[in-house]
Image (tube, rainbow, N blue to C red; front, side, top):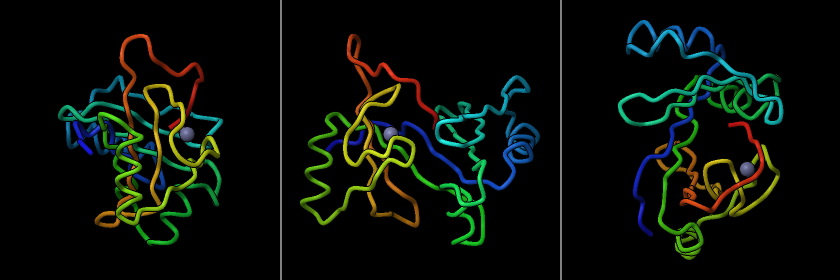
Length: 152
Ligand SMILES: [Zn+2]
C-alpha cells in the first residue's frame, strides 16, 4: 500500500471547549474556529488545520460514546486515531488483512470495511499502532464522491 498523506488526526477529549481554547492559546489556532455538534455520530468537535494536517478534537455527547469510553478505558485524553490517505483503499485493506489486520465497524455508519464518507471512501482497523487506531481514506477525485452528510 502507499500512504500518501495524513488526512486527519482525531483526539478524544473530555471537554472540547476547554481543549479548543488551549489550541487557540498555545498553538495559534484562529479565534474563528468553532465547536460543532454532529448529531448522527453524537459528538461535539472542533475541526481545524494545524501545520498542514486536519485536527479533529472530539468529545462524545453521551457517557458511553465512542470517545468517552476510549478515555474511560485509558484514563486520559489522547490521540484516538490517525486517518491515513491511501491511493487505493481496497489494496490497502487487502494488504493489511493479509498481514493479520481485522476490520472494525465505523461507529457512525455501522459499516465494516470501505464505505462512503463526505471526503472519500474510509475503513477502520481493529489493530492499533502505538496505541492509536488506524483509519484509511481513499480521497475522492474530481467526479467521484459521497452524497451523504456525515459527522466525524
Ligand atoms: Zn463511516
